[in-house]
Image (tube, rainbow, N blue to C red; front, side, top):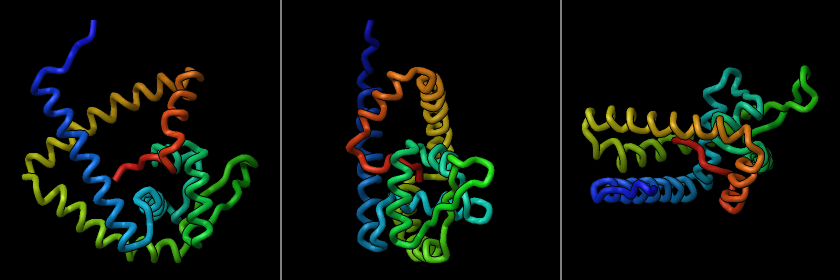
Length: 178
């Protein structure tokens, strides 16, 4: 039997959808306008900038970015063409590769970061109290944990993985956390 949403749950669900959609669109517009960079690329550069030697194994970067290996590979190819990232082969695994943030990529990230952080602050954190920020983090972590548990279970089922790829095929590189 279907457990329908209560009126309060429905209002919360719709508010969540609107808030995340509007915030994502605002971040995307800001980064494209100010840095000529989609939000997805910004997040990849951030992940690499935080890694030791600005280097991550491609599979680890895909996991950190919540992206498929294929989508990440396409994004890295575009970032390589801009000179922001380079690939290096893995000496211990011929099939493995590393993504390395170049000095030009780090400079592009440094130039984009102040505007991006200001947008995040203006449209999210400046509107919340410290208590609400803590609650939001707790809520998001609970949702993420549940989804990752589902993803882990789903990964063992080939049809489930195929459905996930089909559902996101037209979405570009994939969703990356901010």
